[in-house]
Every structure is written in C-alpha cells, then in structure tokens.
Image 1 (tube, rainbow, N blue to C red):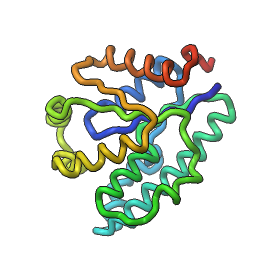
Image 2 (cartoon, rainbow, N blue to C red):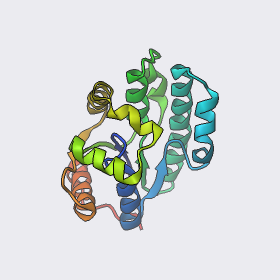
Image 3 (cartoon, rainbow, N blue to C red):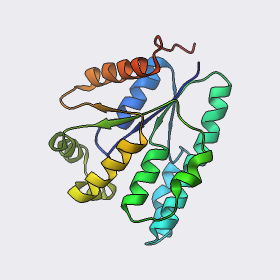
Image 4 (spheres, one colour):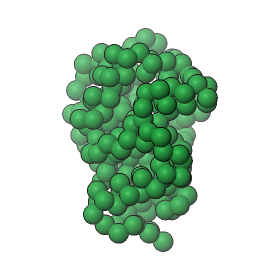
Length: 193
C-alpha cells in the first residue's frame, strides 16, 4: 500500500533531515509544504501579505490543499510519500498566532495522511541545533516558551503519535522513525519497488 506519512514538529527537531533520509532509504517521494515550486518565493509571498496572520494562514492552507492533491496522485500511482510538515503545523501555528478561522474545517477536504508523527526533542537540545544551523527569523517565535508550548499542545492533539528523539543521533533517529511507522501501521516495512 502506498502510504502518506507526515512529519510534524518545531523547527530544529530533525523533520527535514529524517524525511530526506526516509525518502532515500525507503524510496518514498519527498515532499514539503509549501511545495518545491513555492519554496523559493515563500518569503516574498509571506512578506507581501503584511501583518495579516489570517492571510498568511490562508496561504499555508492553500499549499496544504495543493500538495495534498499531488500526494493523492502519487499514492494512486503506487508511490508512497513522506511529507515535511502538512495540515497539523498549518493549523497549530495559525491558532497560536491568533487566527480565528476554522482551519480544521477548511482543511477537512485536504488529502489525509495515513500517519502523522509529531517529532519532539529536549528543548535545550533543540535550541542547540537551531544555534548550530543558524537560527532564522521563523525560529525565533518558538524560542518564546508560551508560544512553543501552545504550538506543541496543538500539535499533540492533531498528530497520530509522538516520537521523542532526545539524545538520538541521526542513524538512531532514522531507525526509531522506521520502527514507529511500522509499529503504528502494524505492517511489515513497506518497499514500494
């Protein structure tokens, strides 16, 4: 069965790295929201929307819908997909930023993942990773404890399972992720090709 698996979590927990590694080792199609076509101009779009958090949330919701339709086509053609952020992050961050739109309802028609995994990490370790890679303007809001706690609480309610990667090196994290996927889906490791 061609699965659609989503990795959610705060910046610096390893979502992008693990999604890439899983795609390489398990032959999943690697995707992200916004999609590859919009990533180079995302900052311009977001900046162009000014201070309206509602407009920004609608932009991200649109990218979820668009990428979900692409995932559906991949799955229909027998290709499994691993996604770096999707519906849960869009909703959690928007709500924490004060957006009152019912994004859960708006995104209810978006293609749903077979499994959404919330990746977590000890906060000191996460902040060290952010510092090492270079903290971006987008990372800064998650350094605020109230903002971070609010987003995590929302992500916990929106994701299927939480996987703590504290003190796991990259190889261990890949192994833990594969084990989590296999255990949760109650299937043998999926080999699409």
